[in-house]
Length: 61
Image (cartoon, rainbow, N blue to C red; front, side, top):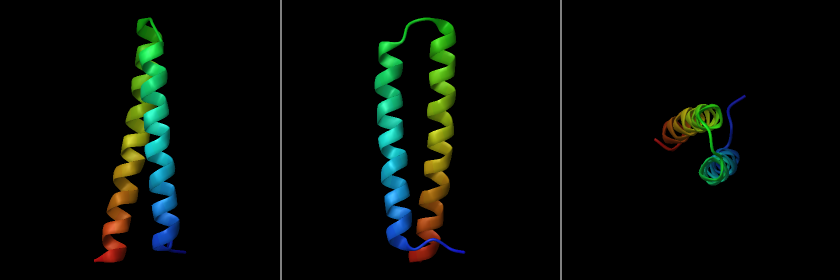
């Protein structure tokens, strides 16, 4: 089932908030392992955001 525009907008906002929070957490971490893990989580969220934005663009034309 395709998501509605409102649902996509909510998911996009949530992912953007996750990225913001992860970025703040990464700034507080120290150590290579923490940095790598934070960077991986941020990259995953950025990929999800890109997919959601693409889906939104397809929905709105």
